Length: 127
Image: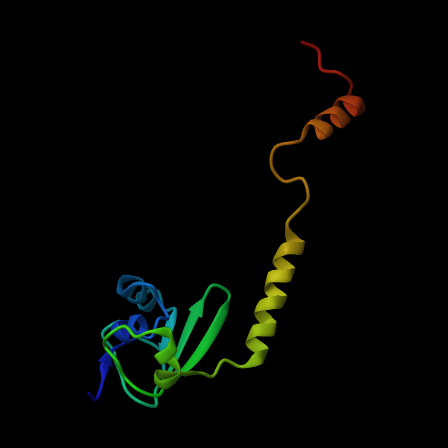
């Protein structure tokens, strides 16, 4: 086997749960093959670099072997090598921490305490 369809390979090496999700990710430019956005029908060969953007991290993989059938997790080290730089993980942790800090306190419906504080400040509403 010289090459395999990209969406099939992504599914086979367990980067996506279904082949449909792998196809959708390729169409939305979440997957790059050798640094360029690709179509789901692109052919993957040994030695290619595959980048996938999953949530808030871009992971880089090196294709060691090809498979068009889904394999078990124990076989994965024979098929792919994770070449994601450690800086990418640090950047993702920082983004998650910053997102948590940017959520303003008290967003949404006011609590009972907030309502009482407002009534105390503005006075009781006249009905």
